[in-house]
Image (cartoon, rainbow, N blue to C red; front, side):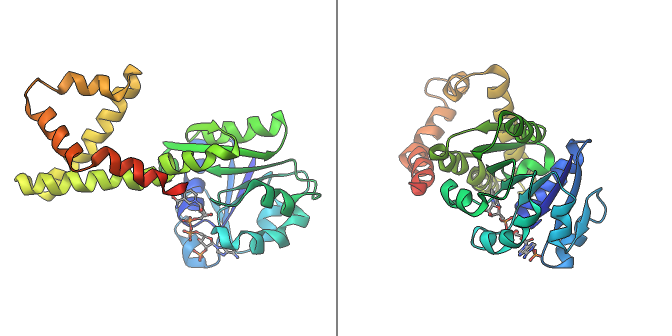
Length: 255
Ligand SMILES: NC(=O)c1ccc[n+]([C@@H]2O[C@H](COP(=O)([O-])OP(=O)(O)OC[C@H]3O[C@@H](n4cnc5c(N)ncnc54)[C@H](OP(=O)(O)O)[C@@H]3O)[C@@H](O)[C@H]2O)c1
């Protein structure tokens, strides 16, 4: 399968790198506005071009990675070459009805909004997919691709925003926890490098443990909270400072 990514910036570029690394039967082409952006891919097996039309012509599936406010402007001249192909938009916040209106009547086989996260580059994305229109075959194709670079869930449009907040913006939220833990570790006496290594490895280990056991986080938390001990005192101090509430409030800004 040939995949062309129109606008290989942060998210489009991470997707290009993830597909090229983890899906051997996919040929990836990336485009951008400036050659310097494309130079980033010179050591990978990604083909690059500044010509969006030629990239679309040679693709089976086209991924639009431009900013949401550029989507219509960049997509419109490409539509005459989209017949019989699949279209994926990475743009957050553009209603399905709007994308359907732009793409209707072009003979496109299936259109999807897909929200991955930056860990797609290392094959560890949590991706949410909403079908704007398509068939079982196109649905399977899109799902297979994104499941090859992490976990992927198909959701209705109403739940796409929630998925984006938890998983896509969630990368930043999780890393902000890592930053805070690093700063706290330094105040307690670790060197910055040691504190960062400890925070990253601990978050990774905690996530892998809960996933491996299939447990609710609180079950794992119970195992490390000795009555009257320092872990429960630390947790309660964090809650007093608004930890859970801060996370929930941050997620709810989408509403
Ligand atoms: N960042 C995330 O975590 C994330 C997560 C999920 C979804 N998204 C979505 O992904 C999309 C892109 O966001 P981003 O953060 O990756 O933005 P970005 O880093 O600015 O990337 C956008 C890319 O589009 C390119 N571009 C602009 N005009 C173009 C044109 N006419 N033809 C071809 N390429 C063009 C730019 O090229 P140059 O670099 O050469 O200027 C740039 O590389 C957005 O719709 C966003 O909602 C982002």
